[in-house]
Amino acid sequence: MPVASEIGLCLDSETAALVEQTLPILSQSERTASMPEAKVSRQKFSGNIPTGDDWELLGFTDEIDGTKWGVSVKRADHPWKTVKVFATNTVVTKANYWLSSNGTRFAKGRDYVIMETNRPELIDAVAKVCDDRIA
Image (cartoon, rainbow, N blue to C red; front, side, top):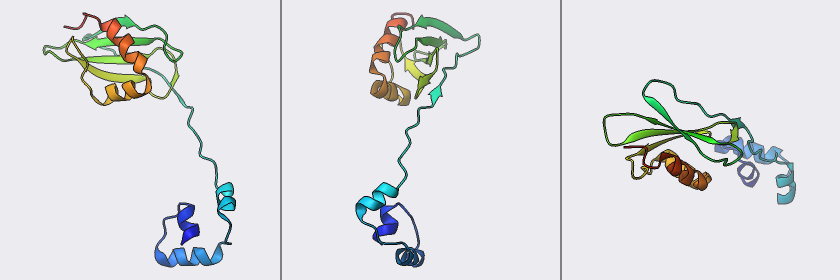
């Protein structure tokens, strides 16, 4: 079933056999040329400023990826604090990150790893804003 499988169809064996019989046999280059080109999303996202009395805005980073990033911390009665990082303008890909900090370092949670992969310079900028302000 080379034609059905090459164009990404998931069919039962009976239907696949029928498709193989009815589709014209094209060369690999013709099959590839007739397939639609994958679209890359260039959707833009906005940051969300945290609200509530328990949130404190620590400050803003310098411009990274065309925007400044706000850094807020949620005060709590335990050593690890929630840190919200948000884009002040629209950006391509993620515009909000949720981090945890004990005042010395960030936990390597899901959003930290995403930030480290996609915007490594943002980690240092956020750390600079947080510098000795989370305890």
